[in-house]
Amino acid sequence: MARTCEQRAARVQQLACREPFLSCCQFAESLRKKARTRGQVGLARAMELLQEEDLIEEDDIPVRSFFPENWLWKVEEVDRFSQLRLLLPDSLTTWEIHGVSLSKTT
Image 1 (cartoon, one colour):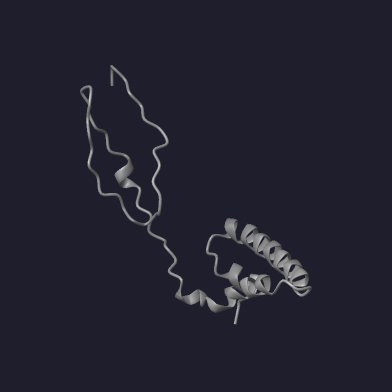
Image 2 (spheres, rainbow, N blue to C red):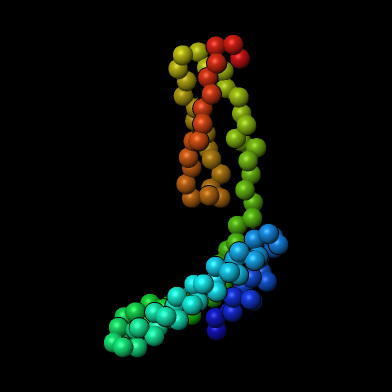
């Protein structure tokens, strides 16, 4: 049986995140409800998609909470060209470089 938005929001640990999560969840529920109403007119496939969420047991979904960042702050001295081989933690699915700084004096 699917949990209500209130039950799901109660599982959000950070208070600053709980209210936005609840608001988003309730908005999504209203969209699904509207889609169900439209689906009853003859869009059987739409109904099937909306009911798929009932097949997922939320307790079986692993919640990641360990996001180490200490590997980010490593200073490397570079003389013209350098290659770094690093093993990155697999707690996230994508990695992006947001900035690189170069200086002749430091």
